[in-house]
Image (cartoon, rainbow, N blue to C red; front, side):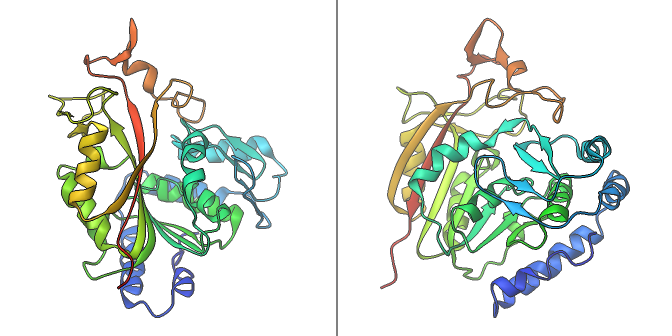
Length: 321
């Protein structure tokens, strides 16, 4: 199931030697991973029922594969990849009700982008859900990167049902990509910036991965209205998350983006995250947002900080001279 899943990627972007190196590195990381759950996940992949590949990307719930003859058995197998974070998805006719209603986020982004024919990089892509939505929006190729091996396993499970579609999830981070110019048409960074110790470096790194005239779609935590130019540095945790290094106001965020060399910087949406958009489900049974908020006031986290609010910012590079 995991034999050379990235081989076909090279056909979608021929002549790029850097991509050949990245695919080899991704295969090495996948084959040589020492995660203790890897044998169990590989066994689950092998247990997936035979399926004629099919893809229906219309609507908010990508549907992959034909309906399985034994839905209960399929559900049991897919549960071995718990927790499922991004979705919803329908695999072999089984609906995977993920922690995030990622379709709500996509609905806030979709009206502001044009991906037709584009090669897209999705940083921190998870199981590849957004990549499927990008394909539906016209993208020609989506290269997703995420160092979490479980998400790569979930992507392989999706690929079992979808067949060879140009949506890939590589087990690596942005630091594994080459320093040479790469020239993606668009780069998405959603839910990543606040996990980076040096947000300025992250933004400049994104800039280096874009073609002239290319666009960045940045989705991240921000402070509420009235605190546009402030920055919050949590003492230990933010909303029970350990690795949140900084939460800027929207004005400060836009300044960071401009300083990184982007122009035409547009803040297209800000939305408070609700416990309907992010919640525990059968497919993600751990604690979720409701446990991270003050039980007496959902306007605050349990640490007393402003409750999560997320912004979508789109910026572009100057076009070719």
